[in-house]
Image 1 (cartoon, rainbow, N blue to C red):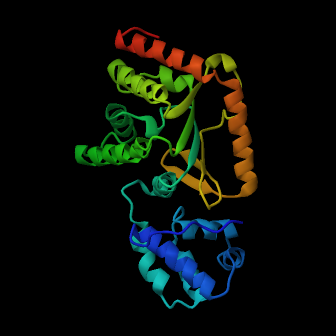
Image 2: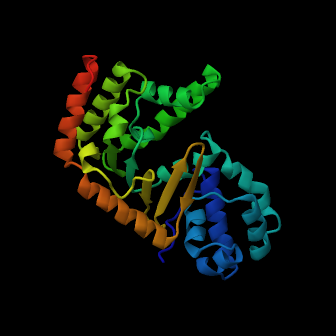
Length: 279
């Protein structure tokens, strides 16, 4: 398994802790696989900790200190590396997303966060948390927009999204908000910044009817798949699981409209929303 890429320890607490973990492991003469066994985890998980794509949990910090003879270093420092502006269930996935070289996502019910406009994001956050103070909603929207800044880079990460037609037909935030949201997707696609396909209703039954898929690939670290539900989510690095989800995504892509036909459909729907007509 390839080793993690070199990290800049000054870039973040997570990078510092990952660099220290790698140093301590090598000093102890342990492979990633051997240390993973001591953590009751996989060697690839250790590689992700060192690469900064996964976070150290409290029990893992204790086991690391015991296995590597580092006193209480990881127990004292893991909390600083775990602080996040994102909800707890999504924090690790958001941080992994920021270091990914390629992201593939299937969205069955809503436009994915990386493609959302502020108004659309606000409507989603408010619907999910109807009694939350406006200041907290502002923070959530700002964090989501900051996530989307990874698309400011002209080439990386590669983002390939399959949107279910249902996500586009639901007028989240109202028709004006949807028109703006779809035009934003159109602009990203026209600038060749994203690949977008629409899975139409006419595709009927398909391979991912049970939920969303988010696959992430990295340079020097194993791929991950993220599973998300209402208020919950988890990252998975099991190779067999990742392969299965990748095959599922390939089947979805094969059933979806081509990028050209998808863009034409999204443009037509944006025009319909803009004229306050039912698509």
